[in-house]
Length: 136
Image (cartoon, rainbow, N blue to C red; front, side, top):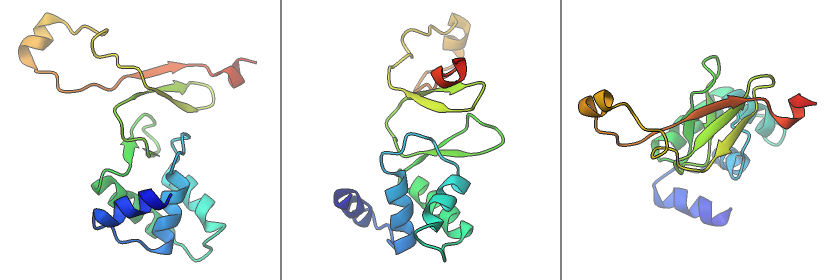
């Protein structure tokens, strides 16, 4: 964690105890939490933290590429501390989101008429299914 804190300092990111708590919560977190999830979790340790502080910290982390916004759920923004290019799979029953680290750009051939109109510079694929927990 110390290395990550030093990386944020080097980027000029102001570190307060509340911001550090948000970073600690997100580090290695694969649940794709909402701002509300993060707020509830860190409020236990930092009872004076406000939702605005959490939300503003997330926005600041986005600005320094410390977190990406996942737009799978149109009703709720979710955040992913894994900023490497990857895709997601969503359980249609419980809403759980998982990471898919394989690259699919080459396997998903775009129609020639699209390639005439666009130069592809990246991709993001969302898969949908039912997780093992919901199958049972």
